[in-house]
Image 1 (cartoon, one colour):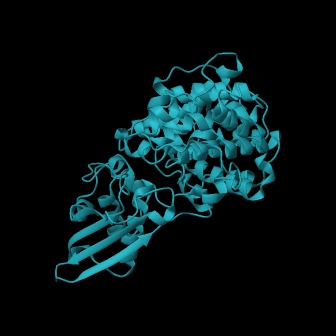
Image 2: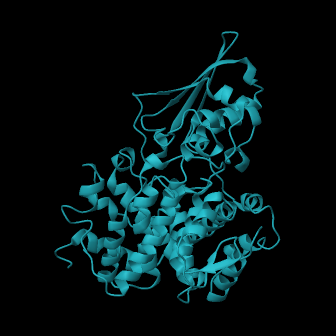
Image 3: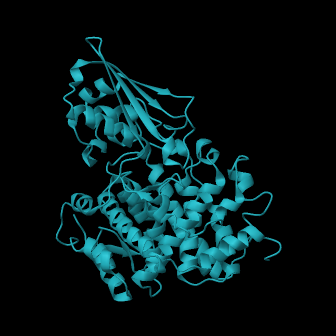
Length: 446
């Protein structure tokens, strides 16, 4: 196997042989990210679409917790529902190398696994770091066309990241890990055309379930190709569109860990990441005293590819408004905040639409195309006022949170039944700690 499939073997060996718990910075970043994601999952647990999944999915008996619902079910269903809930508000973290959302796929898979297999909190954290590394390294090796041509990387890479996490936690052999990865790769699916629709967060759910299932099947002896990165009709042939850099999948693995550098961006706003620089400019202009009634026109300039995820220009509800740069700018300017309530199922307010319809997007074709390098991300807003004067503001990079504690309190309405979660995640190590966390997650917030 080693001679025939060198890249897949090296990838599988990296997953099985590393010990991320030796890296204090990686572990600290993982603990913070898990708190952030749990805030999102609690917040999304009461969403209409989460309820639909619970009603319509065939479920079996099991001890896997459904976060915030006060109920348990089989591991595969729990992985799907919790991953969907964690992504449904579009409030969960992103990673530049993935160009997607790793935590909302990997952590639900591992929490579900913990319902079937004795697992310490340290092992869950280790598996999460490794799964994220796998997603990020694959993202770097695929190039940008994978996303730009219509694939949702959270889904396509998430299946493999989740399978990698489970394989690491359970100590799979290199051969079993390669099989699990190949099975996960054949599950890889998810199209960006679903952005703004209920199916977008469902992608995360599918990936979490498929990754866990792929790992379980491989361990049970279910066969599959062990060369998904080497085969001429494999992962790169199907998904990279000629931009692949295969060695990026393994070079520099864990040195530093991708969870540390470039690291995750924890979202400050419950909407698509690409709109966050726009939000920052809107908030800045409001602080400067700009009144929306004085505006004649607004031009927002992105780098090439910078607004690829912002597929909605004229939203009707807060759901599709999550993917509208126009709405995000208007809301930040008019309300001075972007809260979960701005992105619900109700129709968008007419006063916000009036400002949003003044916005026109542009692209600076002379700028570097958006890539995993944060230096390629910027937004420039040019505001023309009715008196003929103009204002120009620029925001570079991505805003984010360093401490999600307040975000957790807000998303859970500071419910006393789960208020201990952030402190527990910061200190947990053993099986008893993880069991206590799962008990807290099973509390209903309704």
